[in-house]
Image (cartoon, rainbow over the protein chains, first blue to last red):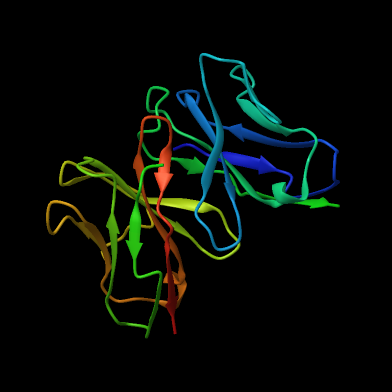
Length: 115
Length: 111
């Protein structure tokens, strides 16, 4: 089955700096890669996703890149703010580029943005 | 934002007791998932449910777990004989047009 590895496990940055979180996956059939943000005690909430027919996607301060050949994808947050502090999870599935199908999650990254 | 509700928000039980966790997903949705998150760890897939049948389950989803759709709207996850290691957050999720949407979760504490 799919295995998703995520690094780093913790990331500490100063407000205004950029943050990069990286994930690798094992199943070449995976084609949908969401990123979730989870605040303490809350549900995971989607912040951005990318499908395998696209190499990069951007939404304001957040961007995701995908390298299908190397089987890795990354989350980039620019101009970080204290409210970006949370746990971030990458995930993958092989459901034809849709949100259907089980998601396999990475181990999570605790992002701390210092004012 | 699609609405997925879960009850109870927190369940405390004694080891060996049965618990039932409930979820009301997006109206009339046929797909449904349960995930587990042990404190401080990653989200783990338990089971997917499609059109009143289990479509896929993980190794975690052993014989002590079961899922049902007792009526037309809500779904349940039953743990027959809870163990200490079942303590976790349990999330239900349904796929929407743009994302797989997670409910608020039930925190299960097994003493």
